[in-house]
Image 1: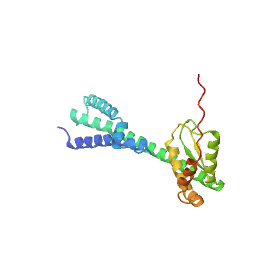
Image 2: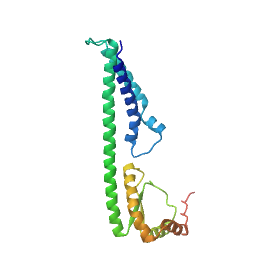
Image 3: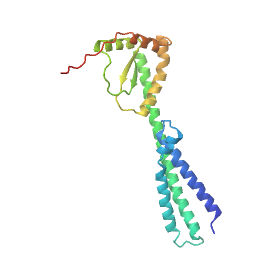
Image 4: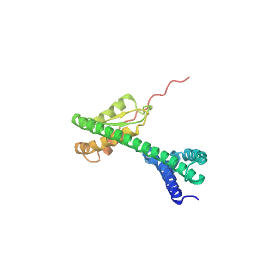
Length: 214
């Protein structure tokens, strides 16, 4: 006869395992925000199905061992529950450790950027960083220098960090932008970005010469 108590425990553990494996992707992908379908896809559910199938095989083999006071069905349930419980514990530990590690790295990045913001404010030179990769200049050198001069007039410069997008660094940059926002508004007045962009747009755009071709 199958133990109802053992059966209920087994069902609960398996359901917790499925939930932890699926939703654990949220902790692994943090701080990225994704919809439920992306989370399910990233969790690779087929790996869990393979693990459950292997556990079932191992539990079936264990059920043939002689254990006092347990019939084969209960031995199967007990072994299967223990195996699922071990995997559940590992997943929870791994996901929690990953989240804590990422959160710590983000906090360190934020603190560094906040400190950098204070230093840049003292120098009256706020630097906005962005990942833009390599791009073909739209303006000639003279026009680009004028654009830089306009930006410096408003106390800002822009720095291309390259092609690599670092999510942790982006979180830090957001703190930097928050830290300098009030300073720039106080320095330049509200709506300073629109004003700066209008001045840049009003510059005479000089097209780059086309490469010589035969």
